[in-house]
Length: 473
Ligand code: SF4
Image (cartoon, rainbow, N blue to C red):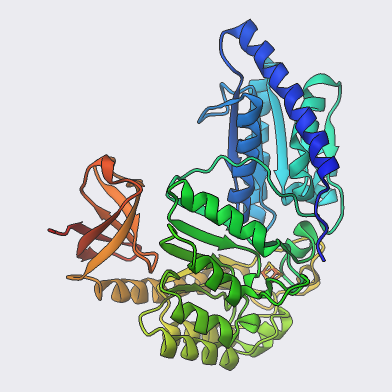
């Protein structure tokens, strides 16, 4: 059973939040404006969700937000440990901030998230980057009011990377990026220990939120006008195993499906070994659950899958995909793939391409293997050269891009219901939204449509997105 942060501990943090409010009010009186905060997030949706909580706490404390670090009194980088390049980016950023801080002594720099949950990284930051004032790990987020207040009022860096399996903190303020779509965490941590992955070491063991807490959060979101709910966890298929209840993830989906006001339900991530028939049935039978599934297969070779400790074979994965396609014929599938796992040969890689060709995913998140200190795979010898791994990676992209384009072409001429998310990233005159199969659709329309569902006729297919025009009523 997961440990819940006690009311007493939450009260301590509320008291510190009050002290922070006094601090920001004094700042405002002296400067004629509130202090500015800037946050940046690296990595996965769990981190995005954590940043929304950090921003919720800061907003309650009296901070306003700015898009750039240069003019901020407080900069927080919520870091990722899954790949080395995300860590390098953060080191680059704090290097740049060092120069800015030389002329801005009032700037506070904070790092949090998975990267700093690793002791060797925190040690390096403390030795090489004394400009960082506050470091807090994944389990200390709820203590931000206290940690920030101490950073602002005490001398020396404040560090909290408590090494525990983590507790669950409920009722933390949240400042969400969108009014129409929201992430809702259903569980935290992971028990799987895939040999390449650092997540179980930095996020702790699996712990599920009480179903009633999840339902309360979703009901409140629906009441506020939020219609799209994405249920989040490192392995949502394990939901409930640690709770004193019969409610599993399939049942939770059915419960959320019954909430008035919710129109779309998505979820991620699922582990193939835990994807049950009950869940496939719930997906097929719940009208609000989107026709979309993200099911990471990582590698096509049974030998590599065993070395990764994934606990399924290629055929077992493919047979689950067949079951899903039989039950939900128009389902959109996406996956994660790692190229260049240390023991992967060229023959193993061909098996990965075979899975792509047989499943025909709409979208893949593909990565070149990144060595993570402390994981079993970090001690394995590489079979392939760097050059060969990059060649294989490019081939993988070629094969997948062709499949994605062909899949998208099937949408041309159809009318799709699209939830409008905002302006397109590349053209401010164009709106962008998603179908329930999570296809990005760009079309012309007024800003008043943002947050609403509209019918769009698809006119053009690209590899990553669709173009369309508003369908006539
Ligand atoms: S299932 Fe494997 S890859 Fe996913 S978070 Fe857990 S250990 Fe990492």
